[in-house]
Image 1 (cartoon, rainbow, N blue to C red):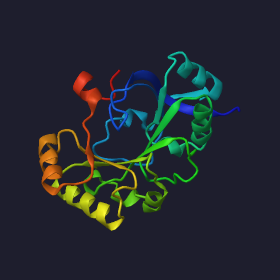
Image 2: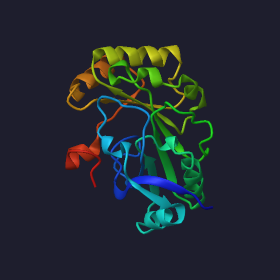
Image 3: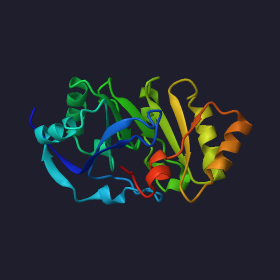
Length: 214
């Protein structure tokens, strides 16, 4: 299968987020994103990068002999051939996760892929980009992530969980936007309200600081 993708970087590190946190993973960061969330820590992936043939990309992944591969961005689904990449990665026997903003249609994503989908909150600046139709497509193997900036975001997220009856549909992840909401405060709210969610912190930032470490 011959196709090309615009790639910002490929690297091997520990997964810093999601329920796979802590597992050695190859990250494929694709270039480009239609969103501009105010807390984004990967804005360098909005443009630039290198155009790579699929074969060369897959060879670079294989050199690490990984079990896990994460396709991220930017917004990976903004490149139409991302779908082909996901299929090939699954066919090669990797456990594959996709980190996506939730602004684009996820219905064509290979069913073997773990979809880690954001739902953008009001304080993100991009709540208007949410594609709520995607919520009905999530299954128990998928994960829905809320990055919360303040108490208003938290209350909004609680309402979304209730309005769309998301409890039990998939894993729900709550995290605090760095420098905007104290993680211990978010933890207190979750415990107080007995929410059926998993709180997560960004392991890579604890270990290495800055962006997605390695």
